Image (cartoon, rainbow, N blue to C red):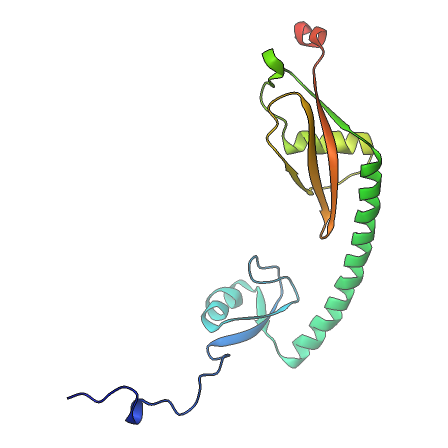
Length: 178
């Protein structure tokens, strides 16, 4: 007859540590789904040893490394504040313009040939406002017909502009010349 697992030498004397099998790691580069650069994260030992360490994405969080990370975090917070202020100014400038216009070829029933893409929208916004936006995140529904649509541009974390887009048919004489 076998002994029950909860008696004798099989019985655990103390609770398992919540940090068992885990390490605190200071990331040196952004790692999607884990953390940003110069951030301290807790990961499993195997992930650290097999992925983060060989690729040079981070190191163990020692006292010196944590002090250095605190200095970098303070600098990053200042830079983020400046970028957020600039994004807020850009949002005000973008929202001053009531409607942005994109011209596209249309067929019968105001149906577009193709659709309006994000680069088309960004081009119209940059041309009308005079701002260089880089590559912000743009959310817009599929535009397959001429008309007016609302879209959002995320300029920075917490700074989002809701704008209006008018899709206008291209002039008929310009289409017939081609």
